[in-house]
Image 1 (cartoon, helix red, strand yellow):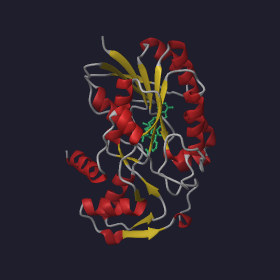
Image 2 (cartoon, protein in one colour):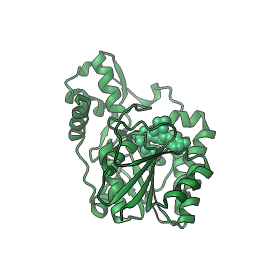
Image 3 (cartoon, helix red, strand yellow):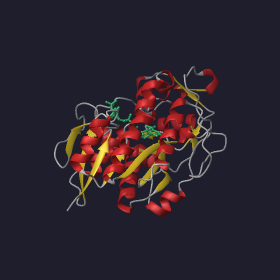
Length: 301
Ligand SMILES: NC(=O)c1ccc[n+]([C@@H]2O[C@H](COP(=O)([O-])OP(=O)(O)OC[C@H]3O[C@@H](n4cnc5c(N)ncnc54)[C@H](OP(=O)(O)O)[C@@H]3O)[C@@H](O)[C@H]2O)c1
């Protein structure tokens, strides 16, 4: 019998990549869910449920209906500046909803995979290991950290996959990402202002989706750092995007974080040590340029 997997936030970038991997799977049956209509472009090989995870009765109803083997929670308020200005809704989606999922997973004895972020760290001493001390600078980071604490103290079987700058392309996306944004702006001939004082390890959405499945396969427990393997400044990232897609690098204007008027503070140097995921999960991320090639191919189809 196939093991049922309930996916939340399936309209999102990571969500759609997980559907790609779990449709017509030989071991798993996928119940994809998101708030509102299904935006995944293909039918067949999975079930879709409209599920707003901020509604505790609905969370309980869907988990009781399917009694899944695992839940993958990708739904979140992911816009960092919006979290700073709309703390109430950030709390609701990034913390309260996780509480509702934990409650239902406790009742039905379900294994929960939850996604978290490098923004739980202050960025003073990256790349970070799983056990390094969290010190969020932003409300988004704080909300994701509080959700981690709920899981830690829950008593359920869970795994937290922390990730960094996820990039890729999916259908009818509600938000862009650095690769699509830089590519499109440079193609239009726009100048782009990019910071030189933030360092990250960008993550191909397909790699992160694969890590979620690997975690389920192994029923992995605890925290895993799951990002790309290349560490670079954001300006280098954009220059590498320009070089890869043959775009005009002279349009890239170097700046630093103090000149951007962003509501939320960003950690300067994050990045992860990903050895644990490689060793324990068999995680094998692409290089940044391999990831750009995969995105290019998808955009041309
Ligand atoms: N993207 C990154 O750079 C990044 C970095 C670090 C960590 N993460 C974490 O990785 C996870 C996945 O990120 P992502 O990039 O795939 O995010 P995303 O593209 O923003 O996807 C999140 C999805 O959740 C849906 N959603 C919103 N409210 C909901 C609700 N109340 N109930 C159910 N679904 C709801 C959204 O629907 P709509 O599209 O209709 O709004 C969206 O499709 C998140 O937990 C995020 O915190 C992401």
